[in-house]
Length: 446
Image 1: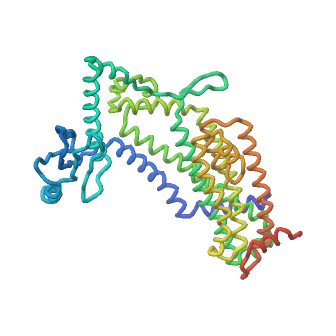
Image 2: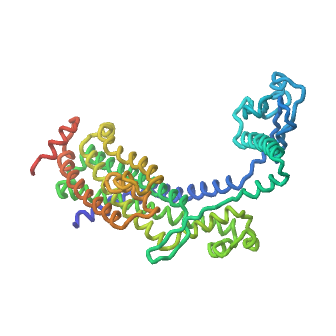
Image 3: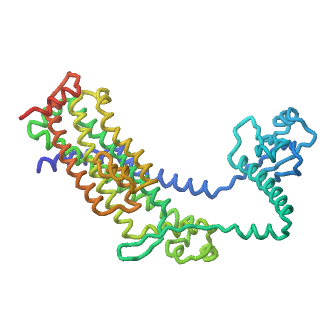
């Protein structure tokens, strides 16, 4: 045990002292916070680009599209399509909108341009024409029905409904939740685990290959058993990964908190929670619309302290257990080959379950109680990713405990198998290894 701790200490300190580790640890939170700020800025930024669109109206409709905001629709009467096409260059039109003669029947217009038009322009032109035609049809129906107040009665039938999701607690307590937040949180956590397993699992494999190719391993195993060396490497690199992740969380949270205090002063969780309408936030000097306020209420309603700690606890467990399981496999691959080029034939069986788990996670978001979701979160090779997609939706305790138990048992078994490959493979040089050869190593009794 003492030797394993020494190896863990060596692996941990040798990596955290590297400049690459320090740069990645401190620059990544700044990058994440910058992306977060950029996304908010993009969401709040309106399209202020001025565009002029030429309109050829072959129908009998009277100007079905009108200029709006920064988009100007300029009608071109008595102008052929070929003449209008030339105006794209001569007059600098952004695009050319052609409304055909049979627009009422075909319900289709054409937007021409020398470059791809934006979604906003296409949507604006389409929505205006649609609303115009719907208005004509509605007026015709009202006239034929001979009911002067029919339009008003039809308007009264339009009732916008918002559906809120409410969860019952074990003690009968009810609280507001958010399906969108649960789905986003599950995918975010599973992707982080996927990324870290590959990032740090490959580090273990490369470390073993490097020591093996430099013949350092021959000196090390004279005083340390192969199993102790492998276990020390795996756990040491796991601690590096966990340290880096915790630093990212703390630093990113601190940067976002400080940035919010500077750019959104007077807006805290308590103010938002007690605000029933946008007007309640005017005193805080915030330009927030009702939709944004509703979203903030959903977030605060979903993330209470108990929920946060349970999610973080599950994440840390599956992060470590999943990493340990796959790192044992990566270490076995590293000990079986002489260089990184030869690892390709052995990487597919290891990486395939991880990639498959991501796709299963997408299906889990649609049906978190289905059989695919259940087995994907129970089978150890996919459970670290799939279970984290399911947890925000709510998972029975027995399923969670079963998944954890099988994952730990699989790690112990895979470590035992990997150790048998490791103790033979680390001393093999100059021989191209096959699956048949590895099977022989597993059957050695010594």
